[in-house]
Image (cartoon, rainbow, N blue to C red; front, side):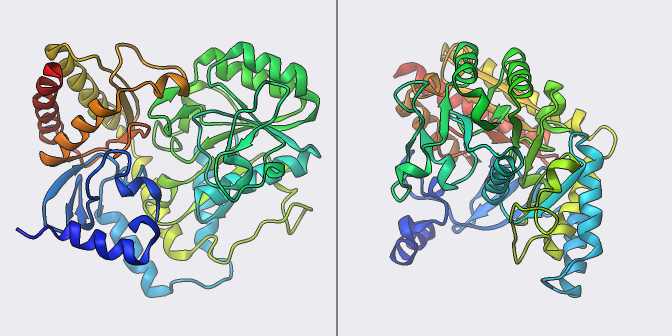
Amino acid sequence: MTDRNDILFERARAVIPGGVNSPVRAFKAVGGTPRFIQRAQGAYFWDANDKRYIDYIGSWGPMILGHGHPAVVEAVQKAVLEGFSYGAPTEREIELAEAILALVPSMEMVRLVSSGTEAAMSALRLARGATGRKYIIKFEGCYHGHADALLVKAGSGLATFGNPTSAGVPPEVVQHTLVLEYNNLAQLEEAFALHGHELACLMIEAIAGNMNFVRATPEFAKRCRELCTQHGALLVFDEVMTGFRVGLHGAQGVLGITPDLTVLGKVIGGGMPLAAFGGPRAIMEQLAPLGPVYQAGTLSGNPVATACGLATLKEIAKPGFYEALAAKTQSLVSGLKSAAAAEGVPFSADSEGGMFGFFLFDQLPQNYATVMTTDNKKFNTLFHGLLDRGVYIAPALYEAGFVSAAHSEQDIAATIEAAGEIFKALARQ
């Protein structure tokens, strides 16, 4: 049988760098040919060979309702008939902004943009403009998009700022970015003691999803808040992944921490290109056209994207939605843990709301350095074993997974059964 995924990948590599428009899609970490998706519905999508997969990436988080939810489809179809884009304000932008602010109490004003990278980059510029300071803190293993100042690895010590992790980023662009170890309280304290007076902000994924699923400990998150307040730096929560995914009020609601700025994406667009950043009125009014911090976007607040986002937020705000979603996710996680334990395979997992992660370790890691010690070969065996059995998880061991409201008990049971078969093979390795 001709594999259309192979054919499409060969065509793609001739015209698109690496054959993909976002690197992780290339299957480079796990080997093999990426699946080219032709359609999706509910908890599933189908590849170019018309093979069905249970989808646990959900477009990397946005599809919290599953694919093709009737209320969302209806809202988008109506919006399309009214026009694709105007380059002028619409009432729907106001409605979406009001809906977001009602669910995220730390935000008094919000600016809509088109991507998580754009939102994080703009929040960083706003933090610098509002404080008049240059320096920022981020954490190893937290990803905030591909803006130059955030593509950085740790320097040689806490007195040394970062080094670029991408070609094309000049060293002088990241010289004001300090990279710390996630969940390392002593290092956090020392960094503020050394640089607190010159820090514009600390940016963090309070539940990280880009080194798989790793939580900030309550003590660590609380200390980030305290030190920022003490030293006049802004605390920026990157909730592109966790916003409306881990709970109705995001990671800040789970942790009970109030950030100064919040970056949102994914779920607020329901699968359309839409993101946002927001915070208190006094900070947000530093943005143009009111203030000196410039930010703009032709497609910001796009009428089709805002229709999609509004319909999604309306559904997830219904009573009991998150309790049901969390129960499904916990069922998946506990089932995978039991299946691994039955075969004696080292395995740990965690979840919050509709977001989860697992590691081939006996204990959950607390930072990126530990995550990096994962056995790649065993993960690749697990990934391809699940893929062959019609279960699609992230094609990289550093990515979190996502359950949607559309996943059924049967989907979860089938996933656990498939994983159990692969754990048997791993136990013999």
